[in-house]
Length: 313
Image 1 (tube, rainbow, N blue to C red):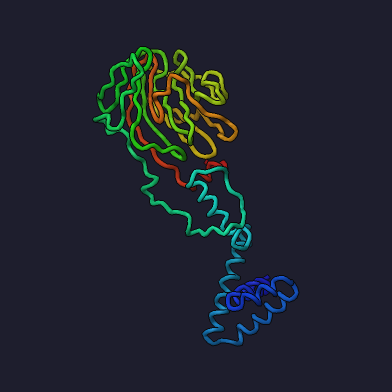
Image 2 (cartoon, rainbow, N blue to C red; image 1 turned 135 degrees about the vertical axis):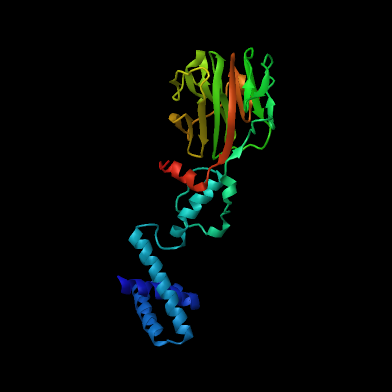
């Protein structure tokens, strides 16, 4: 095994100095083997600086090939070694489906490497002022105020809400907030959010207070699609709401309970007419008063997106 590996590696190193000769030899397995063994002997004889460089390069290539084979990883060669880099590029760009190993000539250095700050949590509310949140003018909306570090959405007739006017992350992100219903019997923190170029709403306590799910999936709202669930909410209790949008799927949690886990491929996501003014990112109530706090967002790392696609998260 080691002799064959060194033969292969030496031939690759020799090819750095004689590309034409290497190309001809690689076309014939017997000729390639013979030439490789000759080069191996020459490498040991020429223990001058040139021979040392040749042998060193050969051993490095041999070691790399042995490691790859032992791990059962990607195949030896530029195309195989780049498979992981192509996946990272896909996850970072947020385009299309997971790429397959294609042997493309894309250099790993062409994949942008963001800093850790790119993926850090960003607060969207400081507990003191609305900042870039604007009161949503539904008509009949209740009063919006700040109290005890939270945004109070007064009871509307029928809706009250806030809409984000700052920069929006459209894909591969995670959004968190805390909300509690203080009075009323309907949704108290329905959140509208981007899904790439589309939009969707995570309904929290709709249809008289118990329905949770996405509105809408394939034109069916949260009360009648595959994400429909029922949950009893208590007044004056804080609930943590978490929404994660990645290229493979949409996931939503209330506290530690996962409510939504739906793949995006083959599905159309949209919002009900009532939530049009909540785009691109907004939080709303229906005939209900609530409080919202600790709103924050972050980008998912490319590795996280890959792990979600592979079912590791």
